[in-house]
Length: 276
Image (cartoon, rainbow, N blue to C red; front, side, top):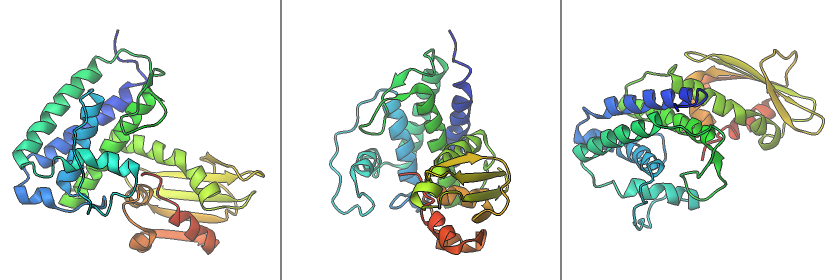
């Protein structure tokens, strides 16, 4: 048996992004590992530590037994506490230790993924703390999404832009768009019968309309809406940073164009972040 065809795009996207991360950090001097990223409280080292830690858990490695310091301001709930253990335990690691562990993890995970023969619908444990089982396809899609987003975190921190149209970018587009109807309808409270258009340009381009039905539920389509309540236009990287909570709306005000109801537009942008 071979890898199921519906799993291969996520595996290919994951491979492209994690190998790009490896190439980015391999030549870094010790001091560069301490550069801050847009992930609150995390340096370049911390982002790479997170990637290593999650992939290690996907390999079935036991979690480190480690007590977190009490002064980590960005650790605010059980999820962030769970994630932080794999990060904090590596904060004293040298550049050589980090790159060596990353390379070994990539080799082992790539071998595991090449030998994946399960059905896409196989229920699997989610690696990041407690929660319901997910399908294998969903799990691999979310790993491709997470690794590409963190590749972009590292690129911005290191001043090395690129891969905004990589396979992982298309995975990220679909993941983030799936969350958009809830953002508009429930979180921002767009009124029944209204429509909100999001127009994104750049390396990844798309135009989507969220339509709110009579019961206040949102649906997403790619048709043009006449007379939408709000139209938001921005470039792809800005969409990514907003939707992943890397920046607040006021931080990218000059890169977002909003037309229509200003209060609804503000509410949507305030609720735009959909990742933990």
